[in-house]
Length: 342
Image (cartoon, rainbow, N blue to C red; front, side, top):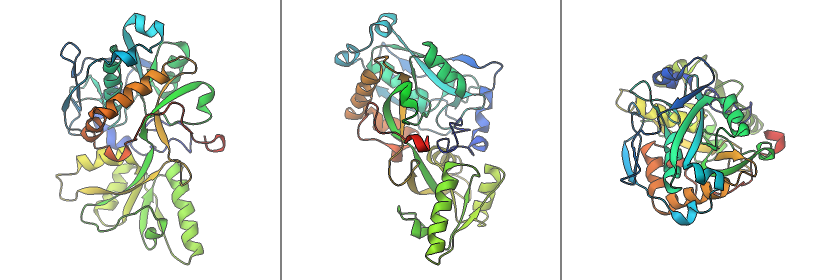
């Protein structure tokens, strides 16, 4: 997913979000890694973590009470427990990918839904969070070398990646349709509702592949779906606001971000339905990613489930307008994108 940082043509569905991340331009840096502030909104002595800070309007700042769950932290690998910190990898250089990970409104602090969840998990584990920001490629170098304990960086669970990494799922990997707020159209999880519509999509993306498959099915049924391409998101959204297209089909997080940015404009938009990024046969999942056999996936999943059970997880998602990507439980190494689609 690039510029939700590309991860391969069929996995990196967020290819067209760069135009949504202009405010995150401060992430650009010389070199491939940078240390990032992990103290944003965190007060371990008071047992609180604040999510949605410095979001430039992308999130509702929310302070959550989170304390160590000793029954869970007891399961940490000794090396991690002994150092007392959790090194959280985020692959957001150079440009960031709002609302998931980007430089905040102070022009220096890494914010976003991903680092926020990493800090919540660290709090449950009784560890000090240390955020390490890097390029997408260097994120995995950091995990492989042991410099990063676990990545919270919009990593899709795939069978290919399981050869080297272990996962703890925490979000659905979804695509979505964005329409004008006053539109009455909804996808309703049925491609047949696209008949007669004009839909924009990014070229060379996973969502394009899915949309073209639906177009073919409709053609076989004697119906028409018009697919439009634009050079960038600015052009796409101008076409949407001008009524030249009925909908934009793209990554759900980028659409969630854009909806917040245009909410008070004359042409606000809304989400008209989601669809699994893995296609009809499998719900794609985003997962915390650690080195295979590190022993971290189990306690991280337990920490996420603790947050789910105690309500902080739902509040974290709501703060970032991502409630439609909630999972009911965090799983260790759940079924991922198959090898022929990785």
